[in-house]
Length: 102
Image (cartoon, rainbow, N blue to C red; front, side, top):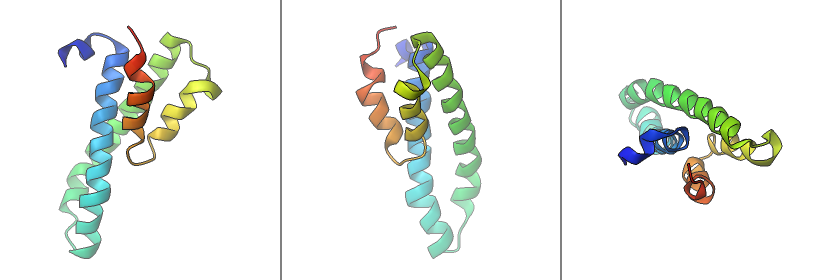
């Protein structure tokens, strides 16, 4: 795990994992609690955390895209699109990032 912190690709993988988990928690726990049980506490806590992780994810996508010389319409768009779908960050991590040697 600490090996991932040594380069931007590894940091993108970690931030992607955290962003994906926070998104799923908001979607499958926070939203039902807010609307079905009238308890918005999870959304109030996780919402800002997820927002920061989302921005960090986008930031690292552009850093890694620059390092790897990705074109916007070849690879980068997959990462940007993955950030708005549940399980999307896990998918691009498994299919693209895992294979990059840095």
